[in-house]
Image (tube, rainbow, N blue to C red; front, side, top):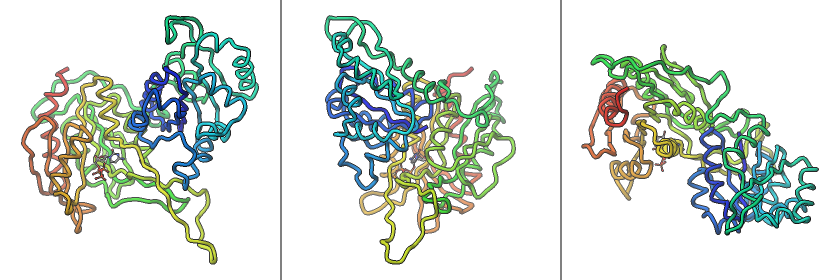
Length: 430
Ligand code: CTP
């Protein structure tokens, strides 16, 4: 679900970071819109890192995407937390002086506001009148919690706990409140107890999630932005993991090869769909391998009808917006939950005048902080769609880079061997 999280300028803004986390961990796509004052409490970089989207308070940023109209229009749910006295007043009088104001005026979906302020401000007739106005327009304004406020005082005015806001918001939007819940068609059975691993089945008892193929980002009903990934390497990994005894989930983003038997298949189209499926699947996986080529950008606007060429009318220009980095987010979620899980990334690099393939790959390993990075040298007909591959496996544990070459099955076997070796370090025996 596309959610806008508006953040008002109160000390409780820091709690909105936990709320954001709850939404993203449950697979929702959240754009944060702080007010100018909120950015004095929590910096824009924090919201950007946690949401994976650019963040601004201004209607003058991202103008070509008509951000001030688009965000409110597209949001399936808007949550404002904390909603300060000032923000409630501005919302009640329909003020459109910043991005959050315009977004609230453009809202088509449900809106929930979670107030936080001092007791006197909350009880003031002006605030109560504003709350009444907002409620009469169908906006859900939660009651603030009671307790210790910013200073020595206490009373009603505390921001409700992030979990309470999360549940109220999803209930309002009619979505399930359990983090990671996807529609029943995409749900996975609960794993049974681990059988002891054997030499021929080193991954018996482990659950391995593998993404494969390339995402497609729609432009209109007939066109998309895609990439050259065939899914062959991801499928080879799925076969190798299955044959090593693992329970395998394959998150397939447009593959040119069929999915193998004996794996749980979840088909996705876009980067955002893959993100949702990956976060959900990762929740009970021992290993996650991101072999899919994920589009870094998607078209800012998707036309509901075919884009036509018209004489005398300027040719269209495609504006792109950044997709979240799924691999990085998987690592953050794992670390936040202190989960024992091995996360493996792939890197497609060409190298250039600024650095060679391995230099770029080492920087990517540091940036994405995954455990293993399988580095492909791409370009000049190499890798994409081919039946053979040549990779270097880099590890964060500091062990020596390892080369593997041959068919994609050979490379998959080498990657899986390395995973089995590292697993004993990361995941304690059952
Ligand atoms: N990846 C991801 N989410 C994205 C982009 C990439 O999870 N939005 C994952 C890929 O599945 C892969 C790894 O990140 O495991 C590296 O992908 P790559 O395209 O090489 O790196 P980028 O992060 O896109 O970096 P750049 O394009 O700047 O090299």
